[in-house]
Length: 215
Image 1 (tube, one colour):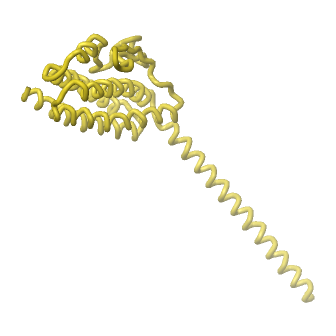
Image 2 (image 1 turned 180 degrees about the vertical axis):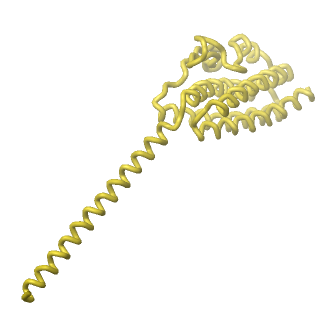
């Protein structure tokens, strides 16, 4: 075999190796892309109807709690009630945003709410139409329009007492809904939030019952 033949053979081997390496790289890249797409799809679909219902119910439930909390500053001088109302707003507003984002990711609509307008404040959701619930059926712990109107008309100690009583009931409803999510839900994020709601609102119920005992 001549030197030219040997050189030609060597060059051919090198060229073949380069082609195989390039193909292997493309295959690896393609597989990585497929894995990424599959993982993204799995994360997107990792929820159930129970998770959707939980978010759809809890959003308007939280919205009513915020409406109740916003009444406090103009109706009482009780520093403990005012502080609690502020903490409720600070905790629940971000949770509403979080659950709204989930519904958008899941391609699910927000709950359809019927609202009751009260003078001097925005409409307050009191009922919701959701899977598994009858049209207009109130969610656990939700206040009626009449309850909200009566609360708005009070001031001072009378307001404090009714507000605390209503918020205890409202929190208990949220806890019941969160417990349902823990037993029926699929989304790890939604179940984590449900446990957070249970822990936080149970502590606030204990606090509010203590304040009621002082009034």
